[in-house]
Image (tube, rainbow, N blue to C red):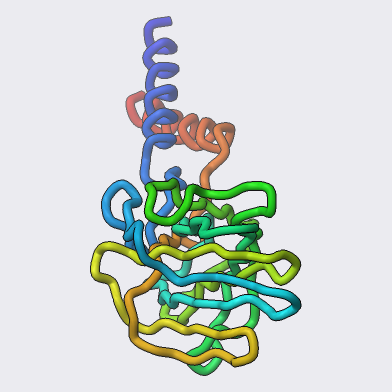
Length: 221
């Protein structure tokens, strides 16, 4: 009986260790981030997004290049209200010759009936959750793009970062295509999990632990 108790204790211990091991971890990894600690940013300046009458909205896009293959989980972006309706459309775009290309995912970041406090005040950046299946590939450039919602009048802003991050930025206007410049980037963070990383189910962990414990018990005999 004592031997059985020791075996069960060993099984439990192995299973717990496996569940706590890095193999079972699904914590998000930061792929790109220019927020200051505490998701802080430049509260006074940013890229203005507006749309008037029937013209499409202004657009700005910030690039990032993953250092590995990741499943995109979320994008955090500092979007605030300037005046009027504040609906902003955020997209994840593939790269096309150094400019934003095909749209991979779309979010209505500031819905028509909701708004962040006016620029100049502190507000909580928007967290945009990604749908499963968006894989970011190592060494490939992607773009986070924000624009005024073409269906409503918009006056909102993508606040700049306060960490000194500057580099390639793409902008487009109501009647002009994308062009690039070097400028302070909007504040944003891209997060994901390593592509191919999976969390073993509890039953799988228990079976694995039982097998290991069985081998150890036989060796002890």
